[in-house]
Length: 338
Image (cartoon, rainbow, N blue to C red; front, side, top):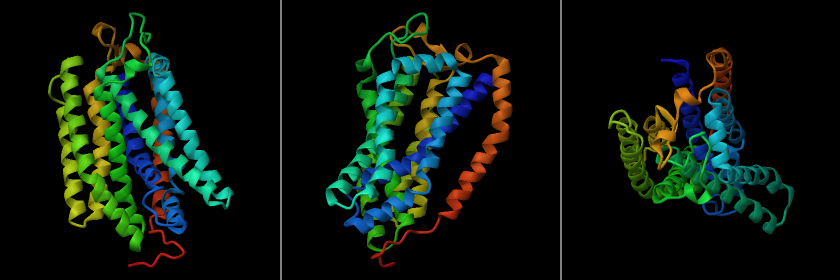
Protein backbone atom coordinates (compact mmCIF):
# COMPACT_ATOMS: atom_id res chain seq x y z
CA UNK A 1 0.00 0.00 0.00
CA UNK A 2 1.46 3.37 -1.01
CA UNK A 3 1.40 6.39 1.30
CA UNK A 4 -1.49 8.29 -0.37
CA UNK A 5 -3.70 5.21 -0.09
CA UNK A 6 -2.57 4.67 3.50
CA UNK A 7 -3.54 8.20 4.44
CA UNK A 8 -6.86 7.92 2.63
CA UNK A 9 -7.57 4.86 4.78
CA UNK A 10 -6.43 6.66 7.94
CA UNK A 11 -8.75 9.57 7.22
CA UNK A 12 -11.59 7.10 6.72
CA UNK A 13 -10.75 5.54 10.09
CA UNK A 14 -10.79 8.97 11.74
CA UNK A 15 -14.23 9.72 10.31
CA UNK A 16 -15.45 6.29 11.41
CA UNK A 17 -14.17 6.97 14.93
CA UNK A 18 -15.93 10.33 14.90
CA UNK A 19 -19.25 8.80 13.86
CA UNK A 20 -18.87 5.99 16.40
CA UNK A 21 -18.09 8.23 19.38
CA UNK A 22 -19.62 11.60 18.56
CA UNK A 23 -22.64 9.75 17.18
CA UNK A 24 -23.94 8.64 20.55
CA UNK A 25 -23.42 12.01 22.24
CA UNK A 26 -25.17 13.71 19.31
CA UNK A 27 -27.98 11.25 19.96
CA UNK A 28 -28.07 12.09 23.66
CA UNK A 29 -28.12 15.80 22.81
CA UNK A 30 -31.07 15.34 20.46
CA UNK A 31 -32.99 13.49 23.19
CA UNK A 32 -32.43 16.13 25.89
CA UNK A 33 -35.77 17.96 25.43
CA UNK A 34 -37.83 14.78 25.13
CA UNK A 35 -36.57 11.83 27.15
CA UNK A 36 -36.04 13.27 30.67
CA UNK A 37 -39.13 13.91 32.77
CA UNK A 38 -37.60 16.59 34.97
CA UNK A 39 -34.45 18.62 35.56
CA UNK A 40 -32.84 15.90 37.66
CA UNK A 41 -33.06 13.38 34.81
CA UNK A 42 -31.87 15.99 32.32
CA UNK A 43 -28.75 16.51 34.43
CA UNK A 44 -28.19 12.75 34.41
CA UNK A 45 -28.24 12.72 30.60
CA UNK A 46 -25.73 15.56 30.48
CA UNK A 47 -23.49 13.76 32.97
CA UNK A 48 -23.43 10.59 30.84
CA UNK A 49 -21.61 12.46 28.05
CA UNK A 50 -20.07 15.30 30.06
CA UNK A 51 -16.63 13.70 30.55
CA UNK A 52 -16.27 12.49 26.94
CA UNK A 53 -18.07 14.70 24.42
CA UNK A 54 -15.20 17.15 23.94
CA UNK A 55 -12.70 14.29 23.58
CA UNK A 56 -14.93 12.77 20.89
CA UNK A 57 -14.62 15.94 18.82
CA UNK A 58 -10.85 15.44 18.66
CA UNK A 59 -11.50 12.82 15.96
CA UNK A 60 -13.06 15.50 13.76
CA UNK A 61 -10.21 17.94 14.35
CA UNK A 62 -7.60 15.32 13.51
CA UNK A 63 -9.55 14.20 10.42
CA UNK A 64 -9.66 17.80 9.17
CA UNK A 65 -5.98 18.36 9.91
CA UNK A 66 -4.96 15.10 8.26
CA UNK A 67 -6.95 15.98 5.14
CA UNK A 68 -5.32 19.41 4.97
CA UNK A 69 -1.82 17.96 5.31
CA UNK A 70 -2.15 14.76 3.29
CA UNK A 71 -4.52 15.91 0.54
CA UNK A 72 -4.32 19.72 0.17
CA UNK A 73 -6.11 19.73 -3.19
CA UNK A 74 -8.99 17.72 -1.75
CA UNK A 75 -9.15 20.00 1.28
CA UNK A 76 -9.15 23.16 -0.85
CA UNK A 77 -11.85 21.97 -3.24
CA UNK A 78 -14.04 20.56 -0.49
CA UNK A 79 -13.81 23.66 1.70
CA UNK A 80 -14.45 26.02 -1.20
CA UNK A 81 -17.41 24.00 -2.45
CA UNK A 82 -18.86 23.12 0.94
CA UNK A 83 -18.02 26.48 2.53
CA UNK A 84 -21.56 27.43 3.56
CA UNK A 85 -22.37 23.91 4.71
CA UNK A 86 -19.18 23.67 6.78
CA UNK A 87 -19.82 27.11 8.24
CA UNK A 88 -23.28 25.90 9.22
CA UNK A 89 -21.76 22.83 10.90
CA UNK A 90 -19.37 25.10 12.78
CA UNK A 91 -22.30 27.21 14.02
CA UNK A 92 -24.17 24.09 15.15
CA UNK A 93 -21.10 22.78 16.99
CA UNK A 94 -20.41 26.14 18.64
CA UNK A 95 -24.02 26.43 19.80
CA UNK A 96 -23.81 22.91 21.16
CA UNK A 97 -20.57 23.58 23.02
CA UNK A 98 -21.87 26.84 24.48
CA UNK A 99 -25.05 25.09 25.65
CA UNK A 100 -23.02 22.70 27.81
CA UNK A 101 -21.29 25.61 29.54
CA UNK A 102 -24.09 28.17 29.76
CA UNK A 103 -27.03 25.97 30.66
CA UNK A 104 -26.01 25.78 34.31
CA UNK A 105 -25.31 29.54 34.57
CA UNK A 106 -28.95 30.42 35.15
CA UNK A 107 -31.64 29.08 37.44
CA UNK A 108 -34.77 30.03 35.49
CA UNK A 109 -36.69 27.34 33.64
CA UNK A 110 -36.76 29.42 30.45
CA UNK A 111 -32.96 29.83 30.48
CA UNK A 112 -32.33 26.11 30.89
CA UNK A 113 -34.98 25.20 28.35
CA UNK A 114 -33.42 27.54 25.80
CA UNK A 115 -29.99 25.93 26.11
CA UNK A 116 -31.47 22.44 26.23
CA UNK A 117 -33.09 23.09 22.86
CA UNK A 118 -29.90 24.72 21.59
CA UNK A 119 -28.01 21.51 22.36
CA UNK A 120 -30.64 19.39 20.64
CA UNK A 121 -30.76 21.60 17.54
CA UNK A 122 -26.98 21.82 17.36
CA UNK A 123 -26.66 18.03 17.64
CA UNK A 124 -29.34 17.30 15.04
CA UNK A 125 -28.13 20.01 12.66
CA UNK A 126 -24.51 18.88 12.75
CA UNK A 127 -25.49 15.24 12.19
CA UNK A 128 -27.72 16.19 9.25
CA UNK A 129 -25.11 18.36 7.53
CA UNK A 130 -22.33 15.80 8.03
CA UNK A 131 -24.49 13.16 6.37
CA UNK A 132 -25.31 15.46 3.45
CA UNK A 133 -21.71 16.62 3.06
CA UNK A 134 -20.03 13.22 3.06
CA UNK A 135 -22.64 11.77 0.72
CA UNK A 136 -21.82 14.49 -1.83
CA UNK A 137 -18.29 13.11 -2.16
CA UNK A 138 -19.75 9.98 -3.73
CA UNK A 139 -22.79 11.37 -5.53
CA UNK A 140 -20.67 14.02 -7.23
CA UNK A 141 -20.43 17.81 -7.30
CA UNK A 142 -19.53 20.20 -10.15
CA UNK A 143 -15.72 20.47 -10.40
CA UNK A 144 -13.99 22.29 -13.25
CA UNK A 145 -10.82 21.30 -15.05
CA UNK A 146 -8.64 23.14 -12.53
CA UNK A 147 -10.07 21.17 -9.63
CA UNK A 148 -12.23 24.05 -8.37
CA UNK A 149 -15.83 23.73 -7.23
CA UNK A 150 -18.06 25.15 -9.96
CA UNK A 151 -21.49 24.92 -8.35
CA UNK A 152 -23.50 26.49 -5.54
CA UNK A 153 -25.09 25.47 -2.25
CA UNK A 154 -28.16 24.00 -3.92
CA UNK A 155 -25.96 21.54 -5.83
CA UNK A 156 -25.24 19.82 -2.51
CA UNK A 157 -28.87 18.78 -2.06
CA UNK A 158 -30.40 15.85 -3.86
CA UNK A 159 -32.75 13.05 -2.77
CA UNK A 160 -29.72 10.85 -2.03
CA UNK A 161 -27.77 13.39 0.01
CA UNK A 162 -30.84 14.44 2.00
CA UNK A 163 -31.53 10.77 2.70
CA UNK A 164 -27.94 10.45 3.93
CA UNK A 165 -28.48 13.31 6.35
CA UNK A 166 -31.72 11.83 7.66
CA UNK A 167 -30.05 8.41 7.98
CA UNK A 168 -27.25 9.95 10.07
CA UNK A 169 -29.75 11.66 12.39
CA UNK A 170 -31.81 8.50 12.90
CA UNK A 171 -28.73 6.33 13.38
CA UNK A 172 -27.33 8.70 16.00
CA UNK A 173 -30.68 8.81 17.81
CA UNK A 174 -30.73 4.99 17.90
CA UNK A 175 -27.07 4.92 18.93
CA UNK A 176 -27.55 7.54 21.65
CA UNK A 177 -30.64 5.89 23.11
CA UNK A 178 -28.92 2.49 23.37
CA UNK A 179 -25.94 4.23 24.98
CA UNK A 180 -28.26 5.65 27.65
CA UNK A 181 -29.63 2.20 28.43
CA UNK A 182 -26.09 1.32 29.57
CA UNK A 183 -25.34 4.51 31.49
CA UNK A 184 -28.59 5.19 33.39
CA UNK A 185 -30.73 3.34 35.93
CA UNK A 186 -34.34 3.02 37.00
CA UNK A 187 -37.15 4.77 35.18
CA UNK A 188 -34.75 6.81 33.07
CA UNK A 189 -33.10 3.64 31.80
CA UNK A 190 -36.52 2.17 31.01
CA UNK A 191 -37.44 5.37 29.15
CA UNK A 192 -34.20 5.20 27.17
CA UNK A 193 -34.99 1.63 26.17
CA UNK A 194 -38.47 2.64 24.98
CA UNK A 195 -36.97 5.50 23.02
CA UNK A 196 -34.40 3.20 21.43
CA UNK A 197 -37.19 0.88 20.34
CA UNK A 198 -39.06 3.84 18.83
CA UNK A 199 -36.12 4.76 16.60
CA UNK A 200 -34.79 1.25 15.97
CA UNK A 201 -36.90 0.27 12.98
CA UNK A 202 -36.85 3.70 11.23
CA UNK A 203 -33.07 3.89 11.66
CA UNK A 204 -32.60 0.37 10.30
CA UNK A 205 -34.91 0.96 7.33
CA UNK A 206 -33.54 4.35 6.29
CA UNK A 207 -29.97 3.24 6.98
CA UNK A 208 -30.35 0.14 4.82
CA UNK A 209 -31.82 2.17 1.94
CA UNK A 210 -28.95 4.65 2.21
CA UNK A 211 -26.28 1.93 2.15
CA UNK A 212 -27.82 0.17 -0.86
CA UNK A 213 -28.19 3.48 -2.69
CA UNK A 214 -24.55 4.37 -1.95
CA UNK A 215 -23.33 1.15 -3.56
CA UNK A 216 -25.58 1.77 -6.57
CA UNK A 217 -24.14 5.29 -6.98
CA UNK A 218 -20.60 3.96 -6.68
CA UNK A 219 -21.26 1.64 -9.61
CA UNK A 220 -23.03 4.31 -11.64
CA UNK A 221 -21.00 7.48 -10.96
CA UNK A 222 -17.60 6.28 -9.77
CA UNK A 223 -17.02 3.33 -12.12
CA UNK A 224 -16.74 0.93 -9.18
CA UNK A 225 -17.28 -2.80 -9.19
CA UNK A 226 -19.78 -4.30 -6.76
CA UNK A 227 -16.85 -5.45 -4.62
CA UNK A 228 -15.61 -4.01 -2.25
CA UNK A 229 -18.36 -1.40 -1.51
CA UNK A 230 -20.96 -4.10 -1.03
CA UNK A 231 -19.03 -5.60 1.92
CA UNK A 232 -19.30 -2.69 4.41
CA UNK A 233 -22.83 -1.99 3.15
CA UNK A 234 -23.92 -5.58 3.87
CA UNK A 235 -22.08 -5.45 7.17
CA UNK A 236 -23.89 -2.23 8.11
CA UNK A 237 -27.32 -3.59 7.20
CA UNK A 238 -26.64 -6.74 9.24
CA UNK A 239 -25.48 -4.61 12.19
CA UNK A 240 -28.65 -2.52 12.07
CA UNK A 241 -30.89 -5.58 11.94
CA UNK A 242 -29.00 -7.26 14.76
CA UNK A 243 -29.20 -4.05 16.78
CA UNK A 244 -32.97 -4.10 16.47
CA UNK A 245 -33.11 -7.79 17.34
CA UNK A 246 -30.87 -7.47 20.40
CA UNK A 247 -32.74 -4.41 21.63
CA UNK A 248 -36.13 -6.10 21.52
CA UNK A 249 -34.65 -9.12 23.29
CA UNK A 250 -33.34 -6.92 26.10
CA UNK A 251 -29.66 -7.28 25.26
CA UNK A 252 -28.88 -3.59 25.35
CA UNK A 253 -25.10 -3.93 25.46
CA UNK A 254 -25.07 -5.92 22.24
CA UNK A 255 -27.57 -3.51 20.67
CA UNK A 256 -25.24 -0.60 21.44
CA UNK A 257 -22.31 -2.50 19.93
CA UNK A 258 -24.34 -3.06 16.77
CA UNK A 259 -25.34 0.60 16.43
CA UNK A 260 -21.67 1.49 16.83
CA UNK A 261 -20.69 -0.95 14.11
CA UNK A 262 -23.44 0.47 11.89
CA UNK A 263 -21.96 3.97 12.35
CA UNK A 264 -18.57 2.63 11.28
CA UNK A 265 -20.15 0.87 8.28
CA UNK A 266 -21.84 4.16 7.29
CA UNK A 267 -18.43 5.77 6.81
CA UNK A 268 -16.71 2.65 5.45
CA UNK A 269 -19.31 2.28 2.71
CA UNK A 270 -18.85 5.90 1.64
CA UNK A 271 -15.05 5.70 1.53
CA UNK A 272 -14.87 2.31 -0.21
CA UNK A 273 -17.39 3.63 -2.73
CA UNK A 274 -15.21 6.71 -3.24
CA UNK A 275 -11.73 5.19 -3.68
CA UNK A 276 -9.57 5.69 -5.78
CA UNK A 277 -11.09 9.17 -5.94
CA UNK A 278 -11.53 11.63 -3.09
CA UNK A 279 -14.26 13.69 -4.79
CA UNK A 280 -16.40 12.63 -7.70
CA UNK A 281 -17.15 15.29 -10.30
CA UNK A 282 -20.61 15.31 -11.83
CA UNK A 283 -21.50 15.64 -14.64
CA UNK A 284 -17.85 15.87 -15.85
CA UNK A 285 -16.44 12.68 -14.37
CA UNK A 286 -12.98 13.28 -15.83
CA UNK A 287 -12.57 16.26 -13.45
CA UNK A 288 -12.84 14.03 -10.38
CA UNK A 289 -10.05 14.35 -7.82
CA UNK A 290 -8.05 11.17 -7.30
CA UNK A 291 -6.12 9.95 -4.27
CA UNK A 292 -2.78 10.20 -6.07
CA UNK A 293 -3.55 13.49 -7.78
CA UNK A 294 -4.71 15.27 -4.61
CA UNK A 295 -1.96 13.96 -2.30
CA UNK A 296 0.96 15.86 -0.78
CA UNK A 297 4.56 15.05 -1.64
CA UNK A 298 6.03 11.70 -0.66
CA UNK A 299 8.33 13.34 1.89
CA UNK A 300 5.44 15.16 3.59
CA UNK A 301 3.48 11.94 3.87
CA UNK A 302 6.52 10.16 5.29
CA UNK A 303 6.93 12.77 8.02
CA UNK A 304 3.22 12.65 8.81
CA UNK A 305 3.35 8.86 9.07
CA UNK A 306 6.15 9.01 11.64
CA UNK A 307 4.29 11.61 13.70
CA UNK A 308 1.08 9.58 13.55
CA UNK A 309 2.91 6.41 14.56
CA UNK A 310 4.16 8.14 17.71
CA UNK A 311 1.17 10.18 18.84
CA UNK A 312 -1.94 8.25 17.71
CA UNK A 313 -1.37 5.36 20.17
CA UNK A 314 -0.98 7.92 22.98
CA UNK A 315 -4.26 9.62 22.10
CA UNK A 316 -6.07 6.27 21.80
CA UNK A 317 -4.70 5.11 25.15
CA UNK A 318 -5.75 8.32 26.87
CA UNK A 319 -9.25 8.25 25.42
CA UNK A 320 -9.64 4.57 26.26
CA UNK A 321 -8.59 5.32 29.84
CA UNK A 322 -11.17 8.12 30.02
CA UNK A 323 -13.97 5.79 28.98
CA UNK A 324 -12.77 3.20 31.48
CA UNK A 325 -12.78 5.70 34.36
CA UNK A 326 -16.26 6.98 33.53
CA UNK A 327 -17.79 3.60 32.71
CA UNK A 328 -20.21 3.44 35.68
CA UNK A 329 -23.91 4.18 35.41
CA UNK A 330 -24.99 7.69 36.36
CA UNK A 331 -27.53 8.09 39.16
CA UNK A 332 -29.53 11.26 39.73
CA UNK A 333 -30.50 12.78 43.05
CA UNK A 334 -34.00 11.27 42.92
CA UNK A 335 -33.24 8.26 40.73
CA UNK A 336 -33.93 4.93 42.38
CA UNK A 337 -31.83 2.10 40.88
CA UNK A 338 -33.92 -0.87 39.76
